[in-house]
Length: 183
Image (cartoon, rainbow, N blue to C red; front, top):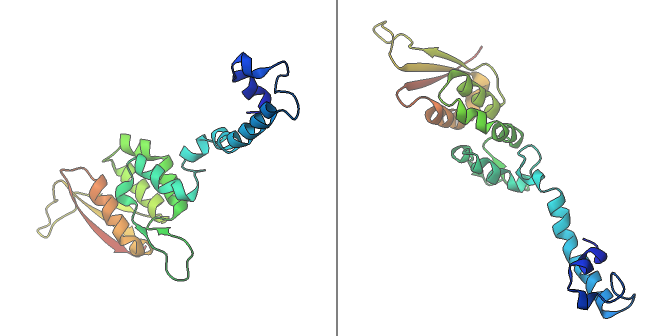
């Protein structure tokens, strides 16, 4: 907000005959200071939507945005090692941005095969997850309300997050097992 706009907000008695006060006057100086004080807030407000957009949010706010949309159970934030200068996530930050952007769709379609497979692929960055529903048990008969997730061997390093996603996103009445195998 510039000094003239601020002056228009002041009571008429303070404004005087000049819109921003006479040049060099006390009012002119106060308005200049007020203009400077408003500048950082105006910069932040001009681009406020960036803070809430998961694809554009600063790295420091990404965890908060993801938590706001229900992804908190997957936000295993770990301290960086000695060679790393900042914190890192169990899920790559680019993948976390995509999960966060699609969180409302995942919530709406929770418990479906497609949602589970898509979440796993985005979280790990690995493709090729498959689900076998009602696989045969040891006696050869189908296991009711059970599924077997076959995960690519490349996803083995993400075992913790894969297990966490499967356990939270599968339908409550089902059981699941996870197998990591090469393709």
